[in-house]
Image 1 (cartoon, helix red, strand yellow):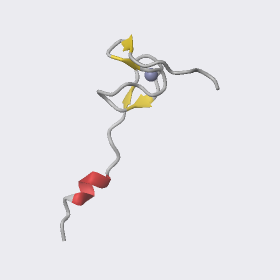
Image 2 (cartoon, helix red, strand yellow):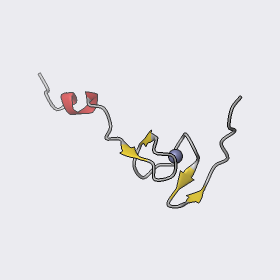
Image 3 (spheres, helix red, strand yellow):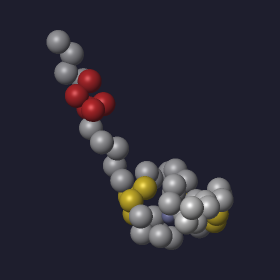
Image 4 (cartoon, helix red, strand yellow):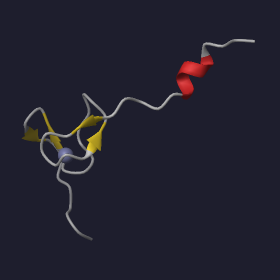
Length: 48
Ligand SMILES: [Zn+2]
């Protein structure tokens, strides 16, 4: 039995977005506000 797969099942580490304080994946664009490295990378439609 391979036990190395157990590490894959772990949840990815979440960091806090400096812009909106939402939990987001580090080194990725924040899905909540679309900011990455201090600038807006994607446009997130607020509200609906
Ligand atoms: Zn954010």
